[in-house]
Image (tube, rainbow, N blue to C red; front, side, top):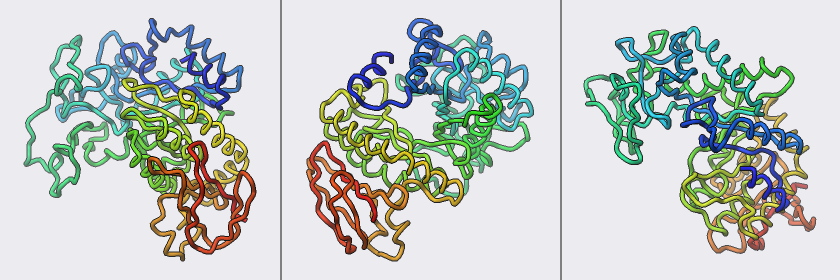
Length: 441
C-alpha cells in the first residue's frame, strides 16, 4: 500500500485517500490488524505519512462478527446480547469471510453501546478518517443458520472452494417462500443473506425489516463519528442503502465488472442514486471483477473523474489497475482529474443544492430539459450540476463521440470553442486520452 501511495505521487496523479479492503485485518475479523502484513505500528506510520501530505485513510468494516470465544468483539457483544437470533432464541450464525459469524441486531437495546465501544477501541488504536461499511445487506455465504451446533473452533470451507451448507426449504413458510415469485437468479429469498425467519430483539422477523439493515448500521456508525469527532464531518461509505441513507452516507454501486457494458451502465446507476437522495455516489472505476484493459481503464478514469464519488477499486485476485500502470491511463487521469479539481468549488455548490433542494449532483439531461423527447433516454452523457456537460466514450475502439447539445451556447472546457446547441447530436473528436467537457453558457 505504501508503494501504491508513492506511485501516485511519482506519476503526478492526485490521490485524496488510500483505501484498504479486508486484507489489513487479522483473519478478516473486524477491528483487528494482521501483525504480519499490516502491523498496527506500521499502519500508524502510514496514517501519519498520509496526514502530513493532506491525504486520508479509509478502512473497510463488515457487520459479520466472527463467532470465537477468544475474539473480544464477539464476546463483548454476546455479553450485551446484541446479535440476531433464531426463532428458538439461539444466536443466528451464518458464514462470511472469517468463517462462522453472527450479525449485530440494530434493534437490540444494547447494540449502540456495544458498537460505540468497539468503534472507540478501533479509532483509539488507529484514528482513520472515514469508514467503509460493506457486506451490510447483510451478506452471508450460506443459507440459514449454518453455524448453529458447529464446534466454535471449526473453520468452514470457503464457499468459493466448496458449496457452503444449507438447509431444507420449507415451502409452506410464507416468510421463506412469499406468495409471489422473486425474479432473480438466486435459489430463494434468503440466498446470500440472513434468513428471512431470523428474529430481532423486538420480535420482528428479518423478512419485515431486511431492507433497513444497512440504513441502521449507517445511522449507528454516523452517530458514533459525530459524537467522537464533533467538529469533523463524518465520512461513511455504505454498500447497502435505503430511503434516508443519503443524509448519513455515501454509496458506491457495488461489485461491477471490467466491461464496456458496465462502464455504460454506471452512468444510469449514478443518476438513480442521485435521484434517490444519495448525491455522493459512483462506481468502481475500471471495474471490480475481471481484468481491465488499458483502453477500457482510460475511458473509465475519464468518466469516473466526474462521478460525485470517484474511486478505483478491484478484486485482490485480479491484476492491479491503478491508473499509473499504463501511460495512456495515467495521462487520462491527470487531464480528467485536473478538470475535477478546477471544478471543486462548483461541485461543493452542487452538494449544497443537494442538501437544500434534493437536486442530484450528477444528473441526466432530462432533469434539466424535461420537455425535450431527445433527452428522455439519454444515458450516455452526464451533467454535473446544471452547467457542466460530460460526453464520454463508451465503446471499444471509438475515437469520436456523438454528443447531444440542447439549445443554447456550450463552450469547450479546454479551448473555449463554441457550439451553438440546436437540440441535435454533434460528432466530437475523442482521442484516447481525452474526454469532452462543455460549459453551459
